[in-house]
Image 1 (tube, rainbow, N blue to C red):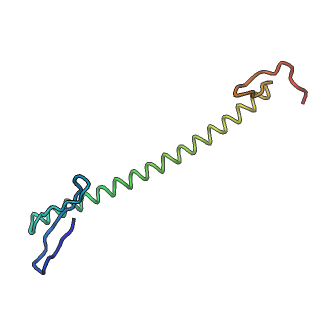
Image 2 (image 1 turned 180 degrees about the vertical axis):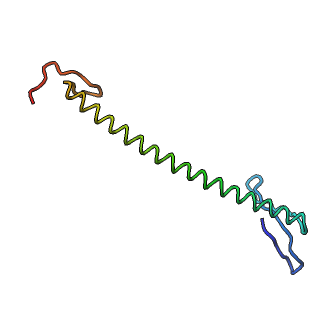
Image 3 (image 1 turned 135 degrees about the vertical axis):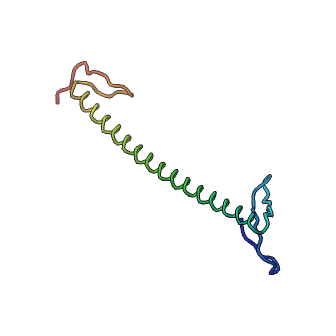
Amino acid sequence: MAWETRKGKGQYYTRSRRENGRVVREYIGTGPQAEQAAQEDADARANKALCAAAWKAGKETAEALDDAVASLDQGCDHLLAFVLEQAGYHYHRGEWRKYHDRPQA
């Protein structure tokens, strides 16, 4: 998407796009039609940049929330382990079991 000048004969507008893995240039022309196409392309690029920024901000917010939830989950695990140990349980091969004869502390 560029204004080009060839051999000093004024400016014309072109667009580049991919088709079947190749870059194809589309000649738009000169005058009001080309200026309108250039403005539409500029608006599309600006909109794409805004969407990318919003997506990045949302991703960062979600990551911060994930970190907070992981921290809360870890704290709950520690609290649960403490309470169960105080109640006479121990963690054995992936599950909590009650001591038959609780060892003396």
